[in-house]
Length: 377
Image (cartoon, rainbow, N blue to C red; front, side, top):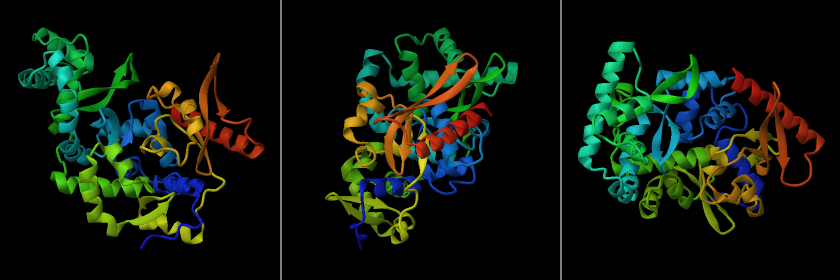
């Protein structure tokens, strides 16, 4: 039965989402646990992805998330929307089985322009595997960098200019032939790039789910970790066609709770919905979330937590680049930035309206100190 919605407001709905995503209360005990719960976390900007995990796993440091990538307990790849995400390693193959065909169809025209054929992709797979083997034997390397693979492609007659190399690499990852592995070193320091390794070598064990079963699993986990959300939110997030998404919802709706708000059905876990009985916590919560955080980006309709008139302040010019956001009591109230003055690194709030009140300013500064400590460690 639908939960009564007489006390629902956009801010309450936002706080329910905060709770579902582990952003209220104690969060998650481990980095892999947080990523596995979220199923897929937007991660094209690595620094933002590190802090997104850090906000959900209290007491961690950026180095802990990098260590999880190095150990393979978390992977970073392109499972959906042609965008990098963090995932649990055992989930990547079956999710690609659902999403990759659609993405490859979308880029088919571009591949024709770049003269990329199935034989070219198979050729580059062989080149990539051989390159990793040679680097391991000669240097003890854990994988090959993008530049090393491009050089090997070129030497074998595969052109990499005009984005052809990027599309070849992307195709190998979409087909679960390659995957990004440990972090690469740059001048002796950990950089922002990862090495590429053969998929089966880096992820020796994967779950095996067929398409229908996989979509059901994906939808359930999305609603559990992102709810309250709509089936259209899920379809946009996963790129699963709406017809298949609705069919999957029928399978799992008895394991979820439906909320009707504003004439729309939203779905969430029973555990999160139970918070409505005693009042949803977090009315005074204040978070400084990274750009691209799932709290805002992970939905087709973001108007519940972000007023439409402020949307372009978060995504200027609708260019797809999400700025860092401040969230007060479930509502996005502004953006924030990292500032550097000489040798001093700080944070600056950029509220949508006026200035932050004294309590909010104190909360923001505490969040800023936590962010700077996290990123420096």
